[in-house]
Length: 248
Ligand code: SAH
Image 1: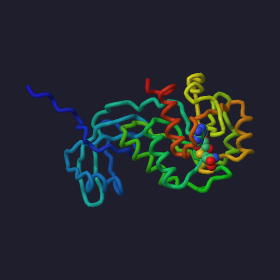
Image 2 (image 1 turned 180 degrees about the vertical axis):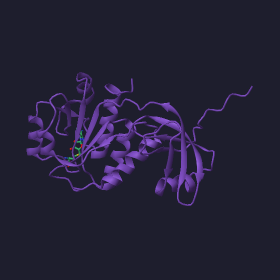
Image 3 (image 1 turned 135 degrees about the vertical axis):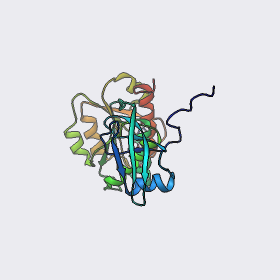
Image 4 (image 1 turned 45 degrees about the horizontal axis):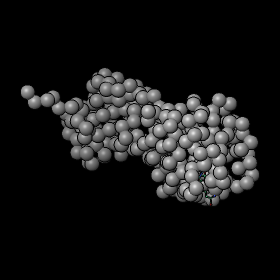
């Protein structure tokens, strides 16, 4: 007897929708999502789609109707609950657009819970378009089959971040002027964590002193080379996931 084909097929499109999803819930998509399903993926009535709502988890759904304006889907069965995401926040200074976009995408793939964009004195870019950033992380989450979106915080200034820093969260400070080797620092601090990465021009002396004065801050080194901000963010996030996150 031939094996039952896996359902939904691996190639089924994945989308985050507002939800909440439930058995039999009808989901009408328009705009870019309808365009993606109808024109790019060429779905037809009866086809399978995988939906996530960032609340209840992952569902299989079936296309009920495709029209010029919208695509209507019906959720059928929940296939996974919303995943537990490691408690790791990436606090990254804004970078020039393509570099920050890359950091957003890769941090999402690597499994961060929260992204906190920062404005520091040497930031070249000082603004982030929240809708665009949201679209990048959502697409990355769909691509890597996350069932939970990373939380995307509003950009804040470094001093505001430090002022309100919670007592129980370690802040690993990626400092190219020196610190504890990152892997051993990560291994030594279980629990809620965050990683601070500077902009293209790095932190100035006053900023570096302010971060180092925070009792929860742990300066770390990412090796002997000076990495670009996005490389530092991606490499250190991956290392944390391997040492203290959910790669076990
Ligand atoms: N100040 C540097 C460049 C900063 S690199 C210069 O202009 O020469 C951007 C950010 O990446 C830094 O602020 C730091 O947070 C991180 N980073 C880069 N290389 C690093 C390393 N070897 N160790 C720790 N952090 C590093």
